Image 1 (cartoon, one colour):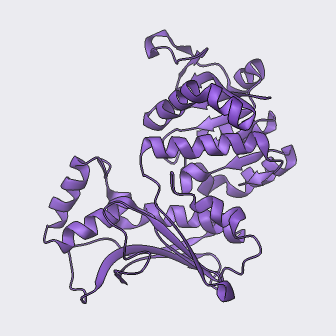
Image 2 (image 1 turned 90 degrees about the horizontal axis):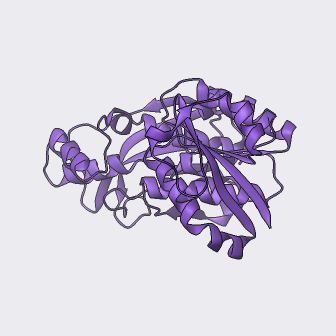
Image 3 (image 1 turned 90 degrees about the vertical axis):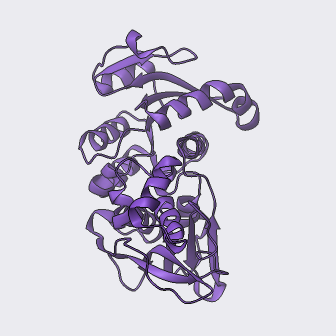
Length: 323
């Protein structure tokens, strides 16, 4: 039995789902996988709490101690990050510190992966630990797993993906005659779109996910990847048998460049067949043909499930570096 004490950073929707899944399924995963996952502490922005089972109410939390002290005192083997991707340096600094302390890092946070990619990879390899990012590349859709390990030995020439469920939903609503404002409002009403959908509609979110995939797939330094993005705007004409899709693309022979374009896809193709907030990624593998991964719910539960998978993988698999 492998004991896996976890320090969880962030207790928003994804963090709460992660902690609940660990608490509820601990016995099951001990039996199935031989790992004893247990959240031993949760950290917010300035407070923290010890955990023995369910997470106590926030009013019982205390002032946060330095992360290095918390990791050492609890013997944590994993730092699980579910903090907002707000562009701050702290998630990256925390991840580097955790690796130096001998802990794996499992993250659904994107921003520090873009700014600290090479440093995180180097620190992880030096420590013999892994940084696992499935929750940041597609929530429950295992696009990152396919890029980093499933396609080893395949000659991947290009990758294309509908990586933002809000954009797919909004484009379908526009095709039905709604205005852009009305389509966004409907996406927000259904809980698909964030209160601020700017990153979704501009292509920034899709570009971020594609940048991370290229880092896993081809070893690109995602901090240096350039982005050309076309925003989702009011509807335009499209030929019959096609649907407009926001497609992020990268080609191996154009290193360091990700494009996001709104383009017509045949309804029978993997990207054109998507409905509502669904997502998919297609890997063009030369003489092996194309490999497509799709599905996986974009939700706090989906992201938390991806983090659970990565946590179990970190405990069981002898790999180091960004995974």
